[in-house]
Amino acid sequence: MQQNGITDQDTKIAGEAHEAGKGIIIVVNKWDEVEKDNHTLENFKKDIYQKLAYLSYAPIIFISAKTGQRVNKLFEMINEVNKYNSMRVPTGMLNQVINEAIAITQPPTDKGRRLKILYVTQASTKPPTFIIFVNNKDIFHFSYERYLINHIRKEFKMTGTPIKIVAREKKDELE
Image (cartoon, rainbow, N blue to C red):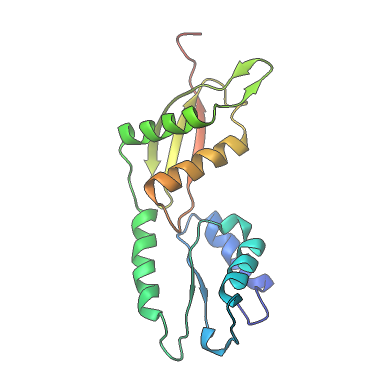
């Protein structure tokens, strides 16, 4: 990132890392050269998250490679993000968290049919990928998927890692 903001190349690289499921930390270098006031840090963060909205899960760190300012903190963050990107969540705990999310915000309906989430399991790590078994995946709207991802991220503090959900249809025996 240059002092004048995020470049097209920054956006392209960040997008590729996100799509590849890599853990991401947004690093702003040369922070020692930026003229600052009481709002500089928050304004930079706001601008970054506005331009890279799909990376709202990625932490931002302001460093100076020249002076060494916060470089040690960067290495701590790298280890933390790697831990979350490699994290495995037990199925029972995962289903409990999803059931809590469902209790807070009911799944969507379509033409009188309600989406039923039967159960969830983790398929892989790097990035954490979850298979969610539903009665009808056509009703599983991306906005509800995003809601569940945000709920999982909050509960398990999965900072810096994309989370993927794959919906699979499983007919409910009770229907």
